[in-house]
Length: 421
Image 1 (tube, rainbow, N blue to C red):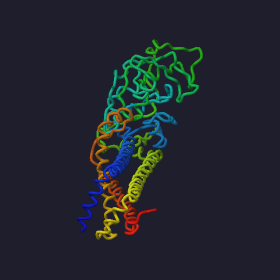
Image 2: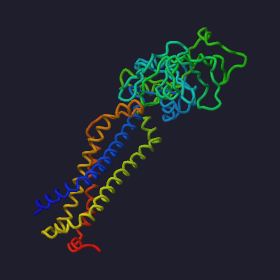
Image 3: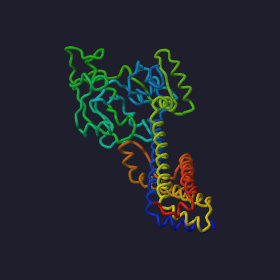
C-alpha cells in the first residue's frame, strides 16, 4: 500500500513539476546564500588573522598589544612612542633573528597612510598563507623620492606609473601641511592583497627623513627650505622607527627573544606574537562576524518559511487529490507521511543543488572576488562544519514540512469531496 501511495505521490509531484521546481530553486538559492555567507565569514576571519604571516614578532614601544597591532599592521592610529634606530639595529644583530623590517609611520596622502620602510619589506613581508607581495607594475623604490602604491591607492586615486604625488604631514584628510617642495614619483604599484597593504603608500626610510629635514617639532622651520636635489648631502639615517617586524631563524626561540626585548632597559620595548595579538584584536572588531552569523540564520528561516508557505498554498489545490487517496484506503497517517516526505525530499534536493550552484558561482566569480576584495574562495565540497550546518537546515526543513503534513492529516474525506459554494 505504501509503495503505491509513494508512486501516486511521485506522479502527482511530476504533474506539479513547475511549482515544485520553483520551490526547489528557491531552497537552492537560500542554501547557496547560506553557504556563501558562511565561507565569506570564514575567509574574512582568516584574512584578518593572516594580515601578516611569516612574521614571528612585532616589536614597538611599550603599549597594549592591540594598539601595537593597530598601528604597525593596520596603520590605524599612532604610536605613543617610537623605538630608537640603535635598538632596531641591535635587534637585527641578534643571533636568533633571521631578518627585520623597520616601519615608520606618521604621514599620509589624501587619507591613505604613508609607511616608510626599506627593501626588506618587499622581500620578507608575507600575508595570507605566506604569500609574498607582488608588483602589478613597476618595481620597489630605488631612489629617495620614489614611492610604491598599494592597489587601492592607485585604483581609487587613478594613479599610474610615473605620476608625481606629494605627501602630507600627519594623518587624516583635513588641514594638513603638505611636503609640496618634495614630490614623489610612482615607481611601482602592488598587486591586490586584501590586506592593509592595499591602502598604503610606501616610501623609503631615507625619504621619511628627507621630507622632514627642514621641519622641527612637527612644523616647517621658518626661513629654511632644503631643495629635494640637496637632500643627499645630509645624513638620512633614521633616528627612530615606529615598529619592527621580526622573523626568527627558529620559531622555538620566540619566547626567549621576546624576553630579551622586554628586558632591554636602555629603550623600553615590547614584542608581541602577531597571531595572539590579532585574536585579541578580533574580539574588539569581530562584531561583523556576529552580524554575518545573524544573516545566515535569517537566510535559513526565510528558506524554510518559503518551503512551508509553498506547500501550504498548494494544499488548497490538492485537497481533492488527497481526498481521493483517502477514498482508496489511505490512512490520515499515510497522507501526513507523504506530505512530510515530499517536503523533506524537496529540501534535500534543494540543498544539494545549492552546493552545486555555490561552486559554479565561486568558479566564475572567484578571481574577481580575490582581486577586488581580497576574498579567496575556491570550489570545494562543504567542510565538516558546513555539512553540520546543512544537516541542521535539512532537519529544519523536515520539521517545517510537518506543518503542511499535519494540516493534510486533518483534512476530512467529506471536505475534500464536497464542492464549495
